[in-house]
Length: 212
Image (cartoon, rainbow, N blue to C red; front, side):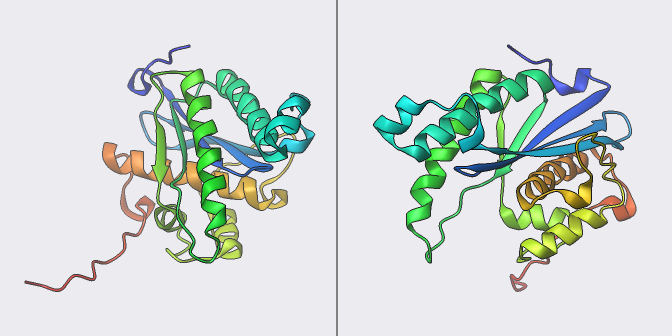
């Protein structure tokens, strides 16, 4: 199903993702297309091995990880069709020299995510945000650890978290990270549209390049 472009809508919806091969964070952030004000935010974490749609035949033929990620992908398509977001975002893949084996698994997950977004809408682009930019957007510092990112997200004054299932401070790290990603793209969109003023602008890292 094709979605209408966001500038025709009064409200804009962003879905932020925190990918994993078993635990997968998903956040929805809605803001005013006119003022940039956040209207609502909510998040949840999928657990691949618990999803009813997980294919045991896939697990037998291709391994447990492939089966879990496939089930998460199907669940993501269902959620996207329900939410009808204008934007979908996730952190860009990065190679960790201390855990080189994890990169291949991450790329497999990214492939499933791209397929899920395309199945939802061929007009919807998957936005990849550098982890450092996501951390800066929530004012956590470009090299912040998980705990610092969590504290920064909990301290955001304009987030307006609303959910009947949980509260912001009870969310696990995957849901928190998904919110950070959605918020990172929200800030980026606001900067491009000049929706934010003064203190709402994220702090940009200073250039380390010398003057010529």
